[in-house]
Image (cartoon, rainbow, N blue to C red; front, side, top):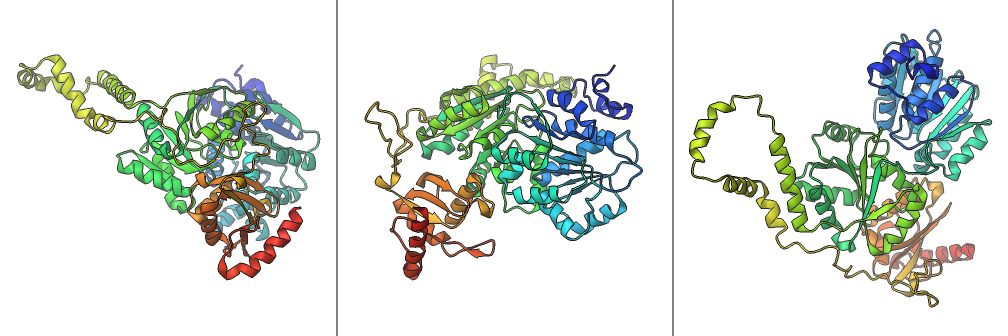
Length: 571
């Protein structure tokens, strides 16, 4: 008996997965499919990306669908349009031999009128992003009253993106559902709250440890001065000549800047960020999927939902502020049983985060030195030699050229031929790295953040240390989680708006209705001037120095009054 058939799947679905090359179910598939086939059990599946979650819920859904009832019976909600399309494509592959089951993907960036027309024709499974789904509900273009099964895929990602209210709205509008299936890579309290509010005695399945990382991923980190991040990044790319990877940055400005610098140096790379249209985004992703691009550089927000097979490396240009974001970044590699590498470029003051990440993902991180210039050249040289030896000469009439080649090189030794080949291929590397510095020994010059020493034992005291006493001040801003922000997206927003570097910032305290930002005193005025008074979601942003420092001259009275109110409420 086929392994998938033993799970309870029908003949048509077994034929489809067999033709797709699936032989053995993954752990999440093996544990989830028998439970979900009942159709009446609420389910929570905790597993990393790349473990086969789409098949774990997609195959049972297809078997439960009643083709004769041409209305939405199943609703799958995913955080991004890329993941929405990927799920739809996978389900189309799974139902190759299951007749008369129709699916529709509804997401922003595509024609809503076309989606409405397709829905009116009658579909069984709807795959949707939250925003477009709610738009369709409010237009009364989709009827969810007869939906039996609701799947929340990448639930933690949707909550990180600020879709909590949207999820509540969708679940409140699917009152006749027979079961809710929730899949997530991590289990923060917000995800647990959804299960308590909308699920009844859910069957919970965990593949690996909670919040654990993929065991097939090698986690490495490199410690360099903040101003040498780009040089370290370039060396890591050069030291891994077969790399096919994603680079993560905090801001779209960094993503665009690094992309342009590397492209000018001859690297096949493009940036993915929020300023791209859907057409431009699809074009970039198309080139990356077909490996016409070696590298993709993106922010966390822009990269959500990207699922590309064969990624060998993930590089964190900087560690994320939200530690759980690291799980999603690293999960882009080491998928479907393959191995992968996640490289993180750290400043010395960020090393403490590594210990937190090790506990979060239950995996050891390895500290590695940034390769020297000579090591990079040596690695590139031997990579080229391997390619040379593996070159296929069986096709082509090369033998006709051999007499001329033998004559041409009659007086040249084999050693000299190899030297000349190396010179042609590696002259640019040799020149670039000829006088390369040792990045592992360069101290972080210009870093004004002090290390506070505990008088008892010489340890860093991060709990009570205030940067306001050492060149830092604290700014108040009337934005918070109620505005749809989480820590990483808030950081990206204020840096993009102010055009400042992350190095000027200290601690960020994100609250429901407002937030406090520690910042270098020299940069505080620039940030206030750039952000205070701007509009966000139809209301005016107020930013001022919480401790009575810098104020915009034109708004002095207003800022003093507003800051005073906030300081009283803070106390």
